[in-house]
Image (cartoon, rainbow, N blue to C red; front, side, top):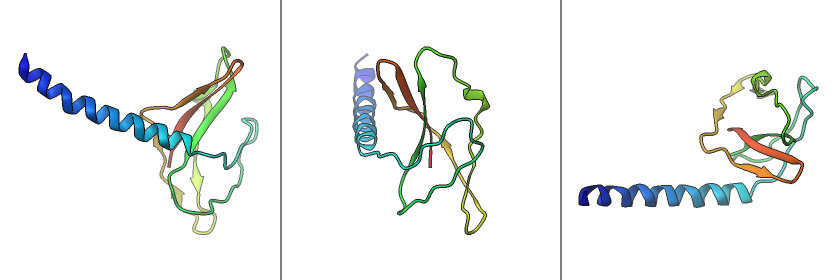
Length: 106
């Protein structure tokens, strides 16, 4: 039982570190581009390299068409597809009537 206690200490410290890291990352985020769901495609420019997130927003307590989304980022100059990664620990922001959730980061 004592060995389990010693094993849980590093796991707890790791989770504490990740929690603080993602909280700071979330707090520094600013909106870069907003596009309604009805539009099929949009164009935006990244001014500098970094980590960015794609967020879904909408009204709370309504059915969301999450399965219908197909994100694909393409560099216009080279035509290359930019790899996207699903967010494991999704950050969420809830208001009274609206909510948003981090879906993908790049």
